[in-house]
Picture 1 (tube, rainbow, N blue to C red):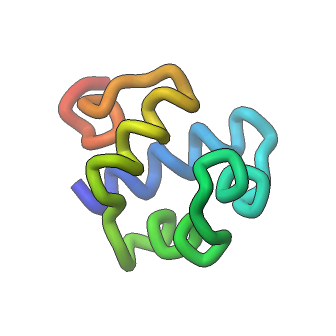
Picture 2 (cartoon, rainbow, N blue to C red):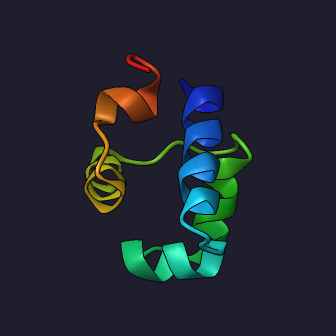
Length: 68
């Protein structure tokens, strides 16, 4: 899941033209946290997955790679 999540998060962020700092502010996490997620160094907690899914209008299954 880590790699798929990282790729999808970065893809969603760049499609919206957002920088890591802007996304971090919107999700109420640090810029470093976004970087760690996108570089497969950490996975988000469920509460953050929910925030990300709502923010981008996608499902958690999509973020986890369970659906395309």
